[in-house]
Image (tube, rainbow over the protein chains, first blue to last red):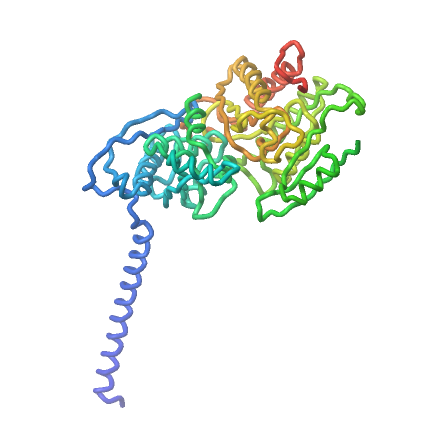
Length: 218
Length: 258
């Protein structure tokens, strides 16, 4: 015969176990959600409090292989305070256009595909480093390093034209809005990749002037 | 004068890939390897001591991807299969016209990009065609290397071996454009940076076959278009006609070596 107090204690402990299990499960789920939100918590969208400014996006079209300028009004971070975030917001808007259903250059991913944009002083190409660094200091030319997400590269349509247009439109858009950007390099998840999706070379440095010239001639 | 054709591998940590040195004096070859300048490609300068080569006309067909590298894919369709089918068609058409053809692959095999360029550069070809296919866009896309033109030099870096041939590649693209448009195909011309084309020491073009018709169709429609035997035959016929035109001395298009 089990004493009554032991039965009551057992029931209470069982109830406590069930409640603890439910609470732990909910905490785990909440922590998982929080972690997922944290991955994209970096500001891919400019804060709405920022004043709207016009930005020129060089939008690609698969039908004729061209880049066409499109001027949009966007809330953007200050160029002086945070040029990298500004570049990221502009490129994010460009990739949002490509991810839209009616895009002439359909590429899935959208703004979250731009993980970071770093703006650095352009490295010297001159054989004499001191001369080259002086030249770069005078011109203030910058190298933009665009870090794309691995999921963007994995889901990018494969093809010479589509990959080349994506690369050229990013280069030309950067130059249109940050004229000091003279060259662009690409990373995927922080690492150098041979190609974007099997064709366009991502190991080289792209000159923005060349990107504009190549994109302008369908 | 002694000439050598060694193939060596150099430090990949410096991203120097595989070194292919053809026609370099042996002293220059080892000097460059010792200096670690890595990927170089030497073109033998014309020499009175060399016997004149018999005139021949060779075309290199590079069916892109293969083996594990499917290229673009959707469902059961893979780019590697379409490029191989197009390469086989084109090889037959060119052989029937008496043109020597070198192909980089004849089956579903994985070929290293450097090996493709080695094959092309050893062939001393008058035209190198890299064949691709894509579900994006429409028509046929002709891409030449975006490298800036350079003067022919005795020693060319491997990664920019295409630079001295840029003008002739653009000329070849023009001939292909005319032939494809004459066949009623929608053509897009462009410049791009692709390692395989950039390292080819011959007039080189990347040809990308995309679905015929209106862009924005479903993948299923696009695959049907790319698998259409009639469409493939028209593209291959037009490319073959362009290569025959490119061979003709009357065309003045630069098929002849400078």
